[in-house]
Length: 284
Image 1: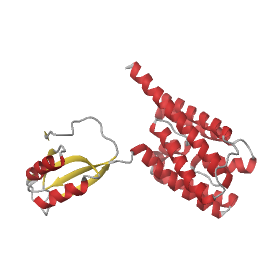
Image 2: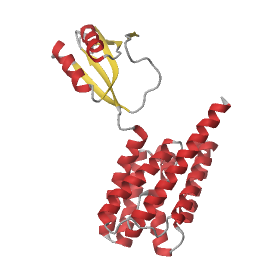
Image 3: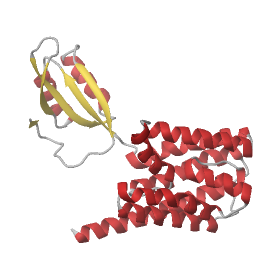
Image 4: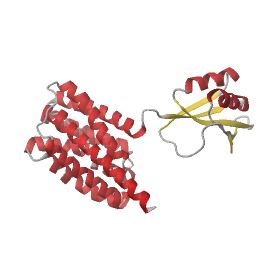
C-alpha cells in the first residue's frame, strides 16, 4: 500500500509540475502582454501586479496562502502540500517566461491562451491540487450561506471582470471573459476526457428482447434492474448499460425497432471503474 501511495504521489507531482509550467507559460506568453486576465485569485493577482508592478508569481502565492491554509481542515494535509507545491512551481514558471510573447494578435492570444491555460490547470486539478483559492473558499462559504459553489465563483469572477474593465478597459475585460470560458471548457476536457461514455436506462415492455439485441449487435453488457410503474403499479425490468457516444445512435435505433414506445434516458458518464463490460449479462 505504501509503495502504491508513493507511486501515485510521484505521478501526481510529475503532472502537477507539467501543469504549473504550462499554466505559467500561458499567462506570461499569451495573456499578460495583452492585459487579458484569468478569473479567481490569478485574475486578482494580475490586476494588482499591473497596478503596483509587484511580481505576479509572488502575489499569487501570497493571495492563495490564506485559502490554502483554510483548506487544511476540509481537504487534508496532502491537498494543502500539493496545492502549495503547484503554486510555487507556477510562480517560478511565471518568472522564467516573463516578457516572453508569442504573438501580437490579441484574439489569437485570447483563444490559445485559454486553451493552454486550461490544459495546465486541468492537469493540476486532475492530480488533486488547485491553483485558485476562490474554489477552496467557495466550498467553505457555499454551505454556510446557502450559495452553490458555481454561483459563488461566478459572483467573484463577475466582480473581477468589472474591475478589469475599469483597469484595462472594457475590450480587454471582454477578451478576458472569452479566455475564462475557453479555459473552463478545456479544463473539463482534460479532467473528463474526450471520449466520455453514456449511461443509458431503457424502460420497455420488451426489455429482455432489447437487451439480447444489444448484446448480440453491439457486443456490450447490460444489467437488468427492477422497477415499478408509478401509475400502473406493475413491475418492470429496466435495462442499464454504459456505452460510448459513438454507439448511442445505434442503441436507440435497436431499441426503437423492437419497441417504438420504449423510454430511453441518457446521462453523461465521465469515469468508470471496475466491472466486466463485454460478453456478459449481469443480473441484479
